Length: 147
Image (cartoon, rainbow, N blue to C red):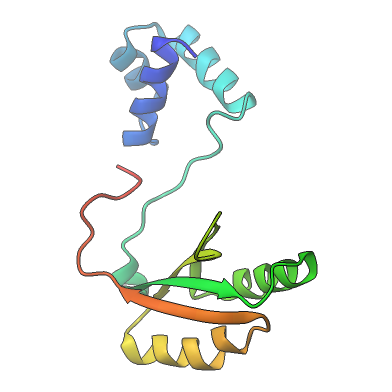
């Protein structure tokens, strides 16, 4: 990737809905070469997709909990079953397997504290293989991964 490719990626990260003409103007190219570069970045997997950033509160998912999870054992079968079970829950919006401790970082989005307790007790802790689940509640979002 050269400087123009990086400028394209930065511009699309900030606004994935801008037209090709707007993008070309922003990176100081004509539309044709800009479109070819975007298509190449998509084909190469640099640009993996486009998505809308939705306000979680408007979907009734404004209460976000960060959960650290350790497994009893880390064998292949336990890990696969755990990951399959956890990713099937609608309330789970992100799962990261980590090196070291904890084994997993999980982001859960629900309407309120009561619904999180229900999820925690009736769903998450019913998944076999969990040794420990430690919940933290977000105070404030200082920086998000998207523009």
